[in-house]
Length: 478
Image 1 (cartoon, rainbow, N blue to C red):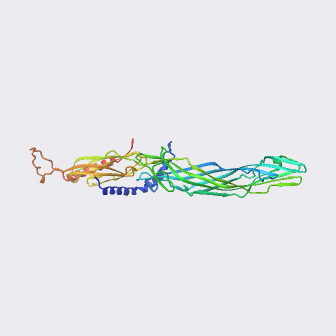
Image 2: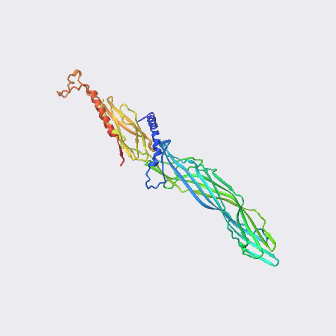
Image 3: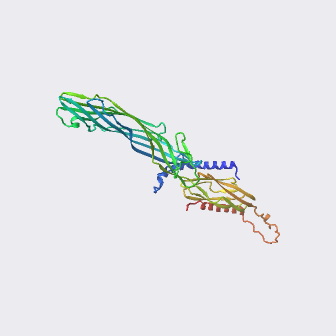
């Protein structure tokens, strides 16, 4: 059984080895999105290693846009104004808004506490734009009499707008636009919307003349705020850590292994409008030297607050992860003569879709030697790890080989190794015969060659080194 101290030492060794490789991995992380296959896949965004922490973080860029025409809750009719006047006008007005919200940011998944989820918004990654317009109709009523000539007319007032009355507002902000959100306020000066002669209204009548004019102005404020970034599994259930909100800036989900995870990401917010439309009509008639007119007056039409939920279409994000599998958890080296060595192989497989970074340590490095202590295993490949048992003394030996990695759900995996060191046979002294055996065998052992012990051990070491070199190979996982 390994001690806690040993586990801490193993992790320390792993992070030390990791620091030596992280610089090169940052460059690789920047290039991975360019190398990712454009295969027909169901996901919208593929995460890549984070530049600052490529072994324990994956980041996917996400972008959202929604545009919608919203009729504001102003559909107002003035009725006949002014009351009891020979000239009256009735106005009907409706306000509409084309609204667009764009947001960009990222989904980040980090571990070893798998899986922690954050959604940083991009600086300047939000755009809020509104275009307002009017739908105005008018009716007129004339009831005048001069020198026995009566004019009594009621009907629609046709007009050709003198301007394209639309208000355009647009502003960028930092995503996600949490509360209090972003507000676009706009006011216009009075503008002439229509100017129509009386002849165009009621036809040409000798002795009668007049005109209808309509000025308009608009004061309006639009407000957008994001309330949450929803995170859902492919089964459309919210992840255990909940949605990301201003109060809860991070979330989490369970990870039970596998090459990757996929999540649906969707911001949810609301748009609110409030404002006032100003209608300023003017209606005049002259008949046989007499004139009638409606005094120019501002008719303010305040529309109530209009609020709409603003739900974006979700983005499906795939997060590749490393996934380490060992083909052996126990190794028995058997009996090995002191001064000799026996080698065994453990296959380390990366069944994941992200780079697997491995550091291997043992609590008995004197007896159990590791040929490779730091390994990088590409996605869907495997490597053979060579472990040698080289006892320095006779007796039973047991140790733990700890394989630490950036696997999110199994960052430490242990291999139990054991072996028995046996003493070397005693050699005859002064070149004489070996001690007599009980069996009575008269066989004589050959004297060792000059420097035989060192030569044999050196030969063994060279042979194992060659074996280790041959076994360090990468194979595409079947």
